[in-house]
Image 1 (cartoon, rainbow, N blue to C red):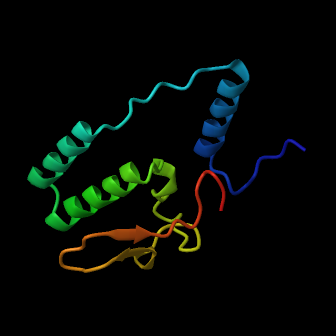
Image 2: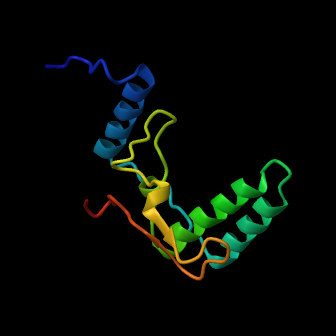
Length: 119
């Protein structure tokens, strides 16, 4: 009926409006370059040498990047949309990631609850 959804903030309404306009006007999405092993290695070295990141954080970024790269995942399939948007029924939890050995794992398995291709 043309009424605004009260659950959507003003900025979200603007984002939705712009996104809809782009779809209608045939606006092209900006091309994204693929992540290559060379870029992945540069990221790892940067995170490992960064004084702004603790070792745990750089290790987690590296693990998440490897999982996305080798699992052919998109960012939206593993990143939480907001600080308050975490839902364990949809997003990854510690229990969704399994390794054969904690100290020196030789393999890992990740249970994806939902993907862009279906649930």
